[in-house]
Each structure stands twice: as structure tokens, then as C-alpha cells.
Image (cartoon, rainbow, N blue to C red; front, side, top):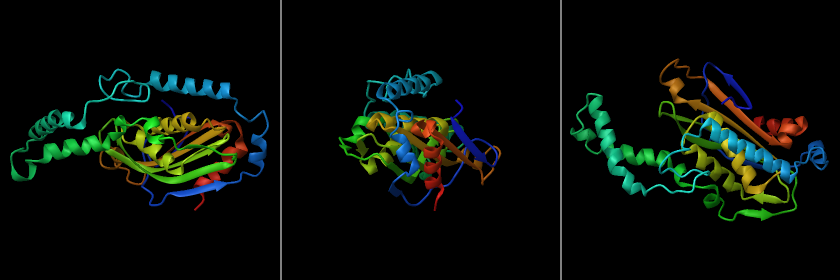
Length: 271
């Protein structure tokens, strides 16, 4: 699925390095904030709901990878996975077979416990399957008479490429325009974790984060920019170590109003 907005430097599809800090800003939007008070830019509840439903339908139709999964818990599904302890023996056996297939001796000293270690590591890398938006929010949505832009930028992100099962990592920046509801700032980082800790492609990850923030607080608009480095490009294939991938999703006012979108992008790109 082609992202709504994306740009790349270097060759290929996947990119960028992890950032150290999470910077938080609550910023007046000047002309953009005044414009958002007009009916032509404010997203109505019905319109917002329609957009959300269309996005969910699009995600389902393009495949999130787990529409017919027998145990994974995704936001669209009602069932829960078995406990992690129940999954470990079968996963460890699979890793042992893999080691043998590579020509290694799984019984040598350095590899005896590797299958179990690898199974535990993979469960951690994909722990987002065990989390839902409701669990993460934990009631941290607050009524507040605030309608200026809120931006959290440079949220560290680590995920697993679903095509090669190798990592990609980078940073996520999120902005939203509240409609009398705000979200606990740390919850934005936790929303990133829900979807990053799954088998992913960066394009889908970007959209899922934006849809989740919309579900959480029904803002006038949401903007998400993800910049990533993909090891499937760095370690194999074209081996372009300096390539970056930048993807974005703009909803509501950020999509409809160029001034609001420009203000967000300026804030994200500022040092």
C-alpha cells in the first residue's frame, strides 16, 4: 500500500537511525489555530468517524497480516493469544531446527540455550500483539479546554520487518489538534510501542499510529511522521547504509489545511 506522503533518500524503501531524546512541545499555532475554529476546517464528528471507518477498512483490505490469525490479538479482533510460556517450547524447537538447517550443531556449548533465548527475544520484539489501545490508555484521556497543537517528536521506535524478520528502527513524531480532550503525553509513546512491536512495514505502522491517536481523543486532526533505517537494506540486498525512509500520515485539519500541516512539519524538522 502506497503511503499518503513519503520521501526517501538513498535507494530502496526502508531507512533511518534512532534518536536519543523525546522532546515534547505544546505550541500555539498562530494563524492555523484561528483557522481551525472555522467550520470549513473543523472536522465534524460524523466526518471524522467516516474517515476512521474508511481507514480501518483500508487497513483490513490491504492486510495487516493477522486478519485470519488463529491467536494473535489485534485491535480488530476479539481473541487473546495463549500465554507466552505456552508458545516458548514450539518456538524453541523451531529455532533448533533452523540452527541445524544452517549446518550448526545445536548441542554445542555456545548454542545449547540459544533456541530458548531466541524464542524469548522474538516474543519480546513482537509483544505489541498482546496489547490493545484500551489497555495502554488506561483512562489517561482528560477533558481540557485546549485547542492548540500538541507535538511529541523524536520518539524512539524499534520494529521488525515482516519481509525478512530483521529490525528496522528510527524515530516517530506525532502532532494533534485537541477538541477539548488531551492525551497523557507518555501515552503517545506507548501507542507507538503497540504497533512497532509487531511484524511491520513502515508505511502501515505510520497509518496505524495516526488512526489510534484519532480513536483515543477524537481530535480535529492528527499528523505522524516516521523516519527509519531498515537492516534489510543495510545488511543485505543493495546494502545502502546511508539510506533513510520517511513516511507520513495526515488526517483531518493536517490534511485539509496547508498552513497547519506546514507548521507541524516545521516543528518536527526544527532542532
